[in-house]
Image (cartoon, rainbow, N blue to C red; front, top):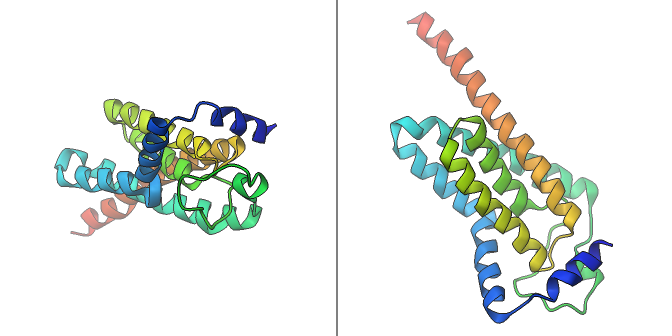
Length: 179
């Protein structure tokens, strides 16, 4: 069933979409766009906490997704199952579940949502959905990999938010009392 969904997506391929999806997927590679966003937010004092929350969420996501789940599940990628599809990007060498690009993207979106960035999380959600779809289009993830990435990402975003909030209220509050 999942390969049928991926094969159906392959029917809409065009040279323009091929280039666009390769570009979109590159934004999610190694969390580049989300790290850049966090660094930009760190520059502005009013947005600094949101930047820290994103970075915390990305670390949690890296541990959960790439450090634990991918190796624990060990799912083969779709292009290794259906070798007749031409792959437009370098073949990922890690396992398929969950989608790391999707997880890191939704970790950043969730971090922005939980930190109260009303406009920014909505714009970021559009980017995250496009990155997730690009992984299906490029035949490197199954739909359930994407769903798993969404769940892991939201969880990582929430944990990142809670950790920063706890640190700010507990550790920094105690430091203020000592002085």
